[in-house]
Length: 480
Ligand SMILES: Cc1ncc(COP(=O)(O)O)c(C=O)c1O
Image (cartoon, rainbow, N blue to C red):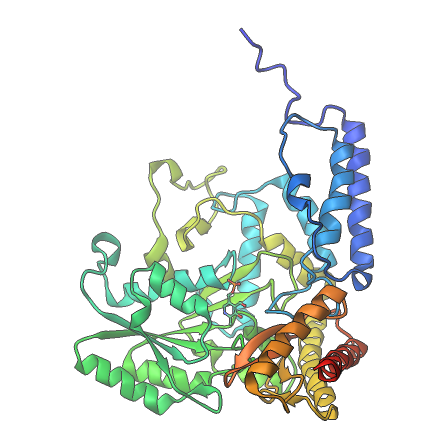
């Protein structure tokens, strides 16, 4: 018989060698962190897939550490660099490294039971609850991101109107959700996933980039008169395209009158709650929501992945998810003790340790450092708008509201040529390593878009990046 128990196969063969190589990895990671400003995105080499071909024959750990240094660290996603403003991505923190080391060796499963990480998640949820102005007794859960938090919120919202949902499904009830025209795709996706259907999302027209509350009320009443069941209103705190905010107090008033669940997509914008004036006021009224989806991995700069769902009413939260088969019963003492078991608050049973990286970030840097960085990001977006205004051919797509600046490099050209030019400039600057803009469409024109959720960006970065755009735009002008 083969001896499968000789041991050692899945643990370090030589503890000293492993320790030495782990230190080498740590040093390489610290170098990467310290040199973030010198390491913009670069395209992975052509043979990257071959380099990662899995042989699974067992290799020397030192060999693996060297390969990670060569093939992984240089080809990051760019978002650790100070001139990265594409999409909405956080910049990552040194505290993540401390947290990742500890969480990897503890290997805690945060589905439940009585261990430190579970208690820490409770502290993180509670801190976030207070920042968002939710009452004591509200509940929350760390999740992969806002997309998952949205699904969880909508399920709870649906249960409020369909008490037998968990046993019987939605049947032929026509549930209707409402959101502003600029709502993130995560809302549509969640409605699709839950079987509510994206056609049952009403996009409410905007006035000054906010949901028009009067039209919203009319739409709800018309749907109800037609036999549908309006159940959910999604407010946006920070729209992905332009960083706009709904008037959350106005939405809370409509939600109260029309008996709608108010969910706030605050993926990044919820964090204006801890910013200075005037940005903090953008989220006034968020405390009146039934649920909030937000991310630590965007505008709190914490490493991926790390989002949270918050619910005003813990009972409604649990009603939507709590379920414990016999083998998961809790106990009044021992390892199966401890409350809450987070599996009762969401989709996952097994869950990694996201709490430690948030806790480390808050405890190491302090809330004020985050407030300053968030406020500073908004000021940098305004500064970028100022730099754009200095360039005769550039124009803003829309006034800066928070941390997003959208502009075209050549407002003097026809729309299709502008679009092609802006796309090309984004790609050129990504490839040259000078700056990462992404693009979005404003009034039919594809424009450059900078979403500044980056604590490493400095005023000079903004000045240099706009200069680089101007150079590219002029180059095209000269060559055309
Ligand atoms: C406003 C908004 N909502 C939702 C999402 C989706 O969040 P996540 O990527 O964490 O799932 C994003 C992502 O950029 C967003 O900006």
